[in-house]
Length: 321
Image 1 (cartoon, helix red, strand yellow):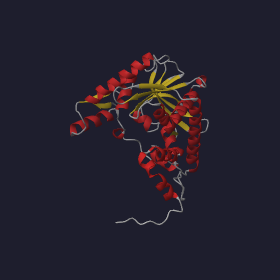
Image 2 (cartoon, rainbow, N blue to C red; image 1 turned 90 degrees about the horizontal axis):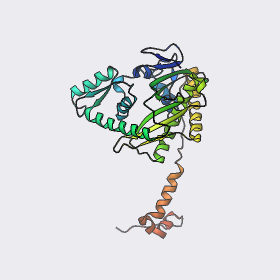
Image 3 (tube, rainbow, N blue to C red; image 1 turned 45 degrees about the horizontal axis):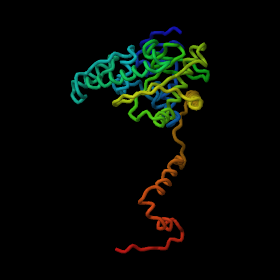
Image 4 (cartoon, rainbow, N blue to C red; image 1 turned 90 degrees about the vertical axis):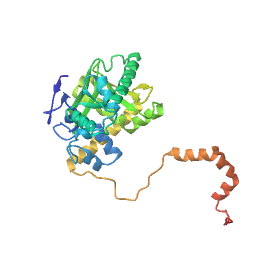
């Protein structure tokens, strides 16, 4: 499980690497690789969109200055300790030319810029995460012992190259930890929605890559998401996927990998089909309206008038001026 230091360009083959974020996001694999983000685009949008977003296919290498820098980026850099250095921009907002230049210079140097007020907020977020981990059996040493930002580059058994970046690996080599910030709350429903929207794909793809590179870990890996709110009181939850969620994540990830393989082999990356389509509404939409018809006093008051309006026997009526 030797981790190789890599700084720029393509890697020579499969392995565990440390590398700058810009190098990773430019895709340093020997051939264009599938990341969990591209897998989500393949499934949520179309292969054509995935081709356009991929830095080695239709897209271009990402300009570091265009990357989204949010509190999550700063919190991760602080929590991991081994992430990119945080550089404080002495301003309240990026409204002045000097502040924007300081931000861009920090990003180009491989650092994480943060406004002074945001840094204090990120530090409180990290404190909340650390306190929760310390009180949680089985999570006490997460983000303390282990490795930060380990890049995985592997040749998948499906024939495509895979790519992933582990937020935190360890302290036990069977443990993967991933920090997620949220402004949408930490209810079961909110987290389940985040999982269904693609975290299940990420979970499988990361476990799949590490098991491919370290076969002795296959079947033993545990992946935990650490969710933290981006507003006070910075509540946290530590989440493992259920068996059903993991099964679905594998189905999605394998489907994306096959689509990616087909695109690479044929050179064809189709968009949406040229057809007149129907889009079904979720079942809950109709149930929600039916519930409103029964519970809304205004609608209930329509009573027989509404029933007649829905009937083919409704007579022609004229509203007096």
